[in-house]
Image 1 (tube, rainbow, N blue to C red):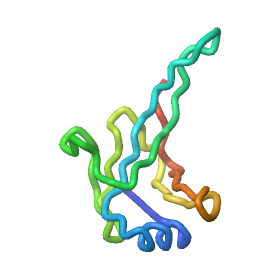
Image 2 (spheres, rainbow, N blue to C red):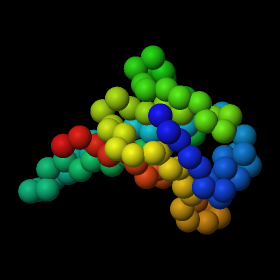
Image 3 (spheres, rainbow, N blue to C red):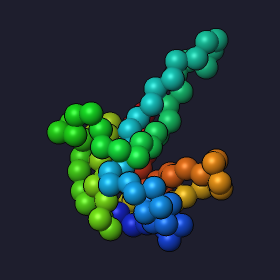
Image 4 (cartoon, rainbow, N blue to C red):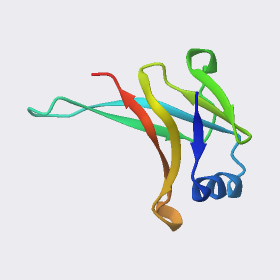
Length: 97
């Protein structure tokens, strides 16, 4: 996998002493006519069963990607928000329809 980080994402991860990042598919069932909603979740820890995930290491971090997610371009991990509302997201990951 080709994995890159924004400078703010690297600072965010190093400040929190994170060693592993997991990107996983979240299926949310909704009521009414919408049905299911899909989202890509980010966990600042390795997954419970790492052998079931795609794995790579970049910038000193273990990266785990849910196999249900498609890597369509280099993965760029970025930070969004600020203070307690800060979080990570990744460009280059998409879920299959």
